[in-house]
Image 1 (tube, one colour):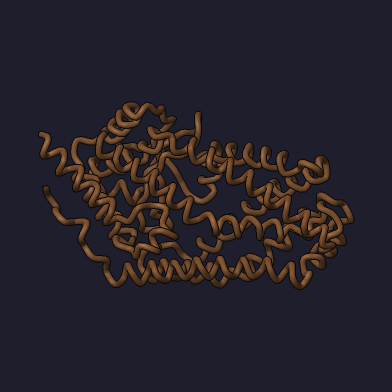
Image 2 (cartoon, rainbow, N blue to C red):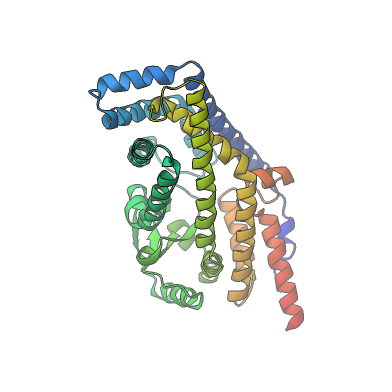
Length: 381
């Protein structure tokens, strides 16, 4: 096969250093957020924030809850802005970003405001559920949350993504036709194929099949379109379509449904325990919001290896579909190598790093699987 033993290519020192720093940055962000929530609860600063929110919110419960959330997210953002800026500088340092500081700062502001709007909707619904149905509030809140989650998954390509990126219909008719045929063969009807102007912010390449139902669309980064052959782009998209064929979106929603239900039950038990211990006067005291968030953070941390293992299994299935639905695995192999180099990805992370942190199999494993498939097909032909 052409490009033999590609899976054995070692990582460059630069790639190892970049990914090691990124991991420690993520660990630092997690530790900071965790410590912030614990300190708010232990020092009772959360109670002080609640009292301030009531004064600023004219003693109106819903408005005061919103003010409390603004204060909470504002302090959290102020504490974490140094790490956020370091992440921006890191991408520039390793020549993976061409975004200017002003554009980055504007994205941070938009991200904060979007997080505030979505967070306010979720928090207001949760505490409305607690006040209206105190005995089984967690079931109602869970149902409302999942409804919102599915709605946002559908609206994301047309409402959320354009807040941060520009999109335009793909003007390469030949490539468009090839990708439409590929998607029809996978049994999905896409509502459009779009050129994603990722190069305005990043030098990395990416592609995705996004949205649900009427908003289902293919988005291809211009950094991918400008540097990859049509066959390589087809192989990348075939992988994305593999997620559709194997119903990974539906399976992920079902998994998220179960995990979220357990999360709301755990939050209900924890909040009741805190009330029983006289930490809070009642369940609807929104000074307990950091405790609610802490339950979510701890569960997310504990479940991360399991969810990443589930994701890696799905990614292997999607890769297998890409092998089966294209005429040769060579474009897949060359595109993986290009992506690894362009995105400065680790090809061979340590086993524990892959087990705990990675939602995708290592590139070396994916290339080995592709080469093995190619050899099997060549032997049968």
